[in-house]
Amino acid sequence: MYNKIIILSVLACLSCIPLFSDDVFGHGLGADQAPPIDFAGMLVTVSTVMDPSDITVGEVDRANLQIRFFDQGTDTNLESVTYRVQVFQAGELLAREIFYDKDGELNVQIRPQDQCFDPEPWRCTIYQGARDPISGGLYAQGSGVPVIQGPIFTKGGLYNISVVIEGATSPKTLVAEPLVFDTFVSIAQEQYFAIPEAFGVPVTIKTYYDDVSNFEFKESDKSISFQMPFDWAPDYIDLVAVVHEEIRIPKNYEPYSIENDFIGYVDGVQVDNRALLVDPYSSDTENIIHFLVTGSELKRINDVLGPDHYDSKEMFFELVPQGQTTENGFSTTFENGYKANVAWKRTYGAGTEIPFQITFFDANGELLKDVNYAISLLDPNGQQIYLNIGDETAPYLGVKASEGIDTQTVYILSEGIYTMSLALTGTGITNWESVVLSEAVFEIGKAGEPIAPIPELYGSETSIPGWIKNNAGWWADGQIDDGSFVSGIQWLISNNVMTIPPTEQGTGSDDVIPGWIKNNAGWWADGQIDDGSFVSGLQWLISNGIMKIS
Image (cartoon, rainbow, N blue to C red):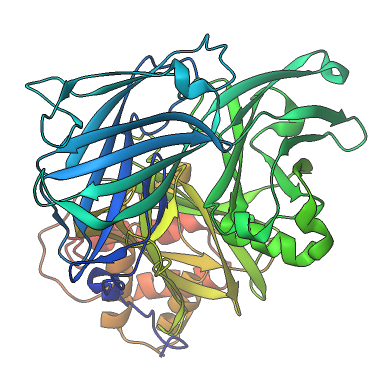
């Protein structure tokens, strides 16, 4: 029972996350997978993957487009495939050509080239590569791959890569009816603005959808707004996976410093916490605020605004700083050395819905982008109160954190010690062979109150969560025995919930705890002695071999 002893529970269920239904499709960063189609007793689909995955106009002179045709049930490629590949942007045809590949995995090099003045851009596109004498399609020969060179990826926005399968299993075999698969990739474009009211502070908007315009800064609330062409018709919304815009502002501009909180609006409707992410890690000089508005959030906005909104052809963004706020947080390490920082504003606490912002890092401390993960939360009684293992309609396991940052909002009923388990499941639309786990124990207090910092995140030398005083008091009063007290402290130290200064491990065999240490614990619980005195007692237990830390 938690009201008497420290509950030590490790959630292992995330390591056995069930596989989702085969009927899945969806988008990743620089990758997409189309809905499957019945073909010859199989569910077949097409995936498209860009390399590099995050392309900004003007920064690359070539990119690899991988197109894969496979049986989704067995994850096996079909052989000898004839593809008709078409590239569109905003409904305008940019390229159309036939390709052939023996193993069902086609690679095509895209070479962006602007300076096309023809009213029909596809006429400017040229193709290179060997041509198969039977299927008529361009194919890879030796180390070379087919090339598409033209006005593709020369402008930021959403590109539709339409793949039509015209033949499979043999270069001579045509399918009875061509199989059509639509996939989408986003290309970024940077646009530059300034805030005259703040002595020309530069603002960069990186758009992954379309050109933005009507940039405005309001001195009264320091808000930034802009708009972008967008079709709000429900049929079109069904096709949109995400609308992604980045606002980049110098770190030294105080209203947009990392210490501030922010609220975002799309067409006047406040977006969900998950749609607005703040990234202070990716740039040394700029803070980046992401609008990541998913398809489901777009539908919600349409529902809020009603049918009159369906005819709108613009999307209006507004970002409003809310002033400086402080955070609670902790850090947790995965089995492979990756880490996650978890933080929430101190204005949230027990009795509220808490938006936990989770940021992922690789073993080198770099932001881990386009990662998929699952999350579970246990309350102080060891009961699971939250579980999110992702959308069943996605081609990957877990929740997508395309920028390496995500927010999970959980209602926390009461103060106490909670356990969060995280599982890394893959990247992009690729699942890892094994799930990578981490677990952290942390405290939730009253709204507005700080919790004891976790050393990995804040670097403090001594960290003692306040609730341990209850346990120490129960031990001093004889309500729990020596073994329960020592076991709890051992677990807390070995799992980095509580740290003390380095102490040499003793080799003694004396398992009797001196009475003065119990007195210390009682006095500390009553506030009569400070943390340092209590820690000194724990150090004595370790150095004399009574408490052993593995």
